[in-house]
Length: 128
Image (cartoon, rainbow, N blue to C red; front, side):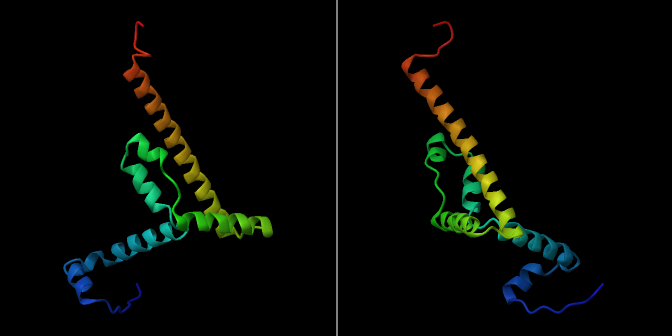
């Protein structure tokens, strides 16, 4: 196994103290995290919101961030101008999947709100 020397900030060194045997795993997990987010820029806010199980109104109000919208626009323009590279195509597919998840969440939220309004107005009760 190759040996490497790292120069890290003192506070990080203190946090790693006692975990020397786990450094390989820590680096591997860190790299996995970096690689996972590289091609999914701007989507973490959307995913974190959905993971928090927000109220239906919050889901319906969900819009892409300016950064995410700019990146999507760039990819659309590039696609029209001559095509996407393989990494860009993979990124585009991830954005399409995210859009699919958001559409499903919004449909579910709309359905919940529709059911709530019927309950409030007395419609849709069993036996009526």
